[in-house]
Image (cartoon, rainbow, N blue to C red; front, side, top):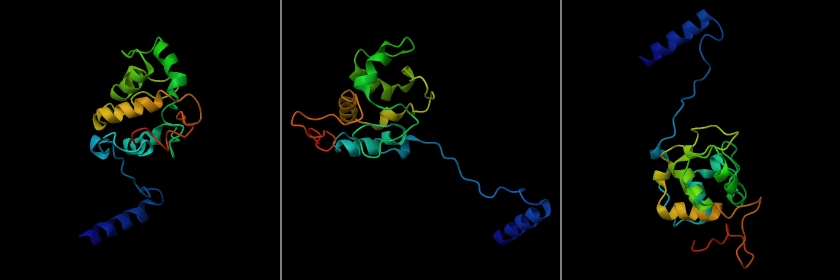
Amino acid sequence: MAGLGLLALTVIARWAGPGALPERVEPILPLTPAMVPLVTGDEPLAQLFAKAGCPVCHTIPGIPGAEGRVGPKLVLAQTGPARLADPRYRGQAKSVREYVVESILNPGAYVVPGFPDRTMPSWYGQKLSAAALEKIATYLESLASESAPRSPDGRNRELHPAGG
């Protein structure tokens, strides 16, 4: 039966001419909660961000491979206060830390100008534990430049995170 179907497609393609049938059709699969694993917060910082999928869309200094361009660069110590003060901000956060958590749990509260709305899934926060959210917020609220924040002893926090 499959052979007859292939034969029929071949005959139709030859009869109709080039371009009558698409060369290859790629399925488009929507991102769903089941595709993203639960992040517990026990993971080392770089692994936590990777498991959460943040590097796919965001550039995050100090996180290997986090060079995404779909979402804004995450240097929240530098950009967070201006976002909170922006008249377009519709959230409830009063600090950069609260803003980071809110941005994950309610990404529509503020869309950074120049980036598309409704790109970050609204269910994303459901896949992160409270400990993971806290770890992410702590790290992101400390980022103000191209490099990862340093511990008091001068070591890169990404490579030697506190408690992880």
